[in-house]
Image (cartoon, rainbow, N blue to C red; front, side):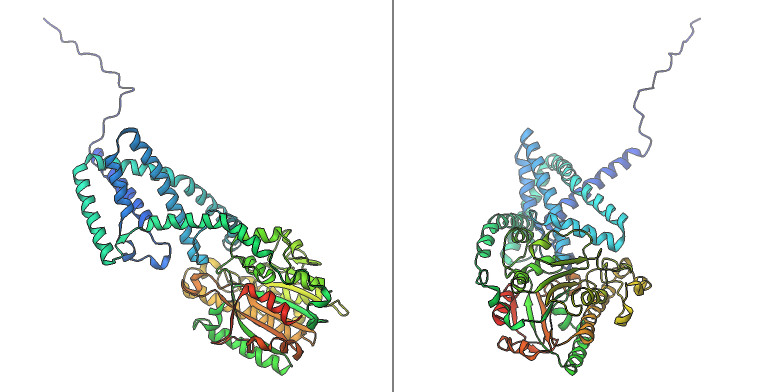
Length: 552
């Protein structure tokens, strides 16, 4: 009788696990979802606008000619050539996506595209703004995420293109027909002038290339401009003679732009402060003349506006700024110093040594560390404007002092514009501890920035506070020997004023001595603290020469 002997069980230790029922369809769905997402990312890269205001449905319904050409190349090349083309295309598209995301941020904050050569230096102040507004952990997290995105995007884009290329080749007939139909549709849209015909990626890359070319050529051009200076060799005895014995205060009011006095969202409250200040100062014997200057920047980069006004050169990028500071340009500071003034600088936002101070020839330079402030920070703002002005009176205008020329940026109106301190009696300012409870009043930045209405209200309130502090200072401490020049450094970001706002900022000269204002009677500036429609508009780099000419 035969005995059936069963074979021993197979060793399945290293055998692949059989797919569970239903797993293969799930995997197939995930693969197709990943493919569609990849295709969407490529399409987004090719057609996405650079401005948030253009993020509409119509803004994305486009036929990108670059995508059609890319598909044609996929189908035309074979073997190792296809691998090379896909790798190069993946890196280029990854770079383009990073640039477009940076452009989105730069247009939102600064109303201009990202400069791939010069704008990396802005990462440090951007980190400081995020850190002071949302906290150090948030700033670190944003930095880490940004770094990972920059490293990962080109790799992910290359892998995505390889997947899409395999599909295109596998379905070559359908892909060829679809590409041909879309190419005809693109041509028709182009002839009819419809926005659906897109070449935005080529335009975006062309913009970046033109910026790089401009940066390469601009250094020599700026150097030549810096050598042209009618005042460089003028003796101090022939400079600023009409201001002898005066204390001249040059004050930049952060983000104080034309919209603050003309945009209906802000103008009623801001102009009420300016008009009331005009009336009050007139009753005390002060006069004022006002106009507009066109700033080289908007949204941020305040130092470039300061350098433009003081040097008489158009400083609209960081390369020009570095070139200026490395040279020996004759500035307003230098003119006052050569003519016998004490040169002071009070920089309340600085919390570290500032080597640039040597270029501007300050005798005394104060910052948040040595200004004597013991109160709290107000988000980004280390020192409230009223305290800064009180410190100016204490440090630079003691009885019997030498006539002083002092530059002060008022920074309480710096983004994120909340919280805002309140005015107190000048005899209560003290060491700043009076502000202890004010730093938690109102919405914190992470709340205020949730809605456009809240952040715009915060911006308006910050301008009101800064201007009120300055006007109150002149009312309290102004005398026959005080001359105040105050102006905005730039307009606030497009979040506050929109994409089409000008670069104009108000500028005002206040003096009690009528001879001071008589010297600029030929400028055509308007009376009072508030510039109205029809006020003259100069480029900011023209101010130095006109000022030195008027008061020579």
